[in-house]
Image (tube, rainbow, N blue to C red; front, side, top):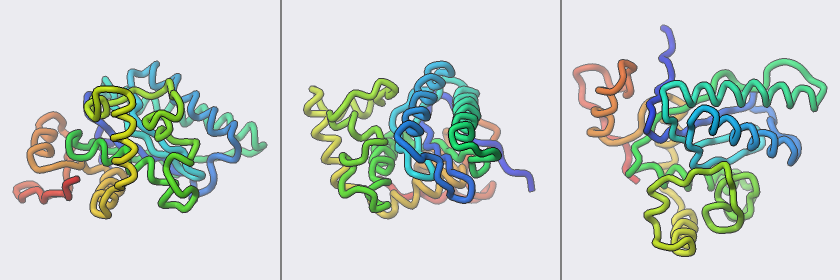
Length: 232
């Protein structure tokens, strides 16, 4: 059975995961992290993709993005992936593949899952036992959103701006949101949807999304009701 094309729709937030081949390390130095972030910044601008959040782990990375065109996200990921592999192989004196196949991604419902996805991304290093708190990890967007630094590659989503009327209020509200964490159901739903490629959201969202694409957006079989995924 042929695999489905990725679900990519302009104007919707997408949760993206790219893994190293056989879970191998894709970052071996601070310079490696900086190179990938530079490539993301360059190509997000070039292909019209708003980058809302990211985390670079040792053997994979997560992004939360909103593309402005059908092809923007795949074009960005292709350009970033090819150039980073060339850089990494040259710097390490190696050859061959670096990625575990193509990147994984799906569309998420903004109101239910966008802020939860940001927290999920920020908390990756905490769940992995790499740091005690999200603010302690240098290679994620968390520091930008809690006022520790300015990350020019980021485009805050309108939902973030709604967290407060001042920068301090927004930063404090977001820091508390991440400290509170997300439920295991949310964590599972965010992981599962991105790896499977099925849209993540409520019945109405999924039904509306299906009207906008010929690609099937949910695992439910035709003629059967779409099961409701966990709410945030």
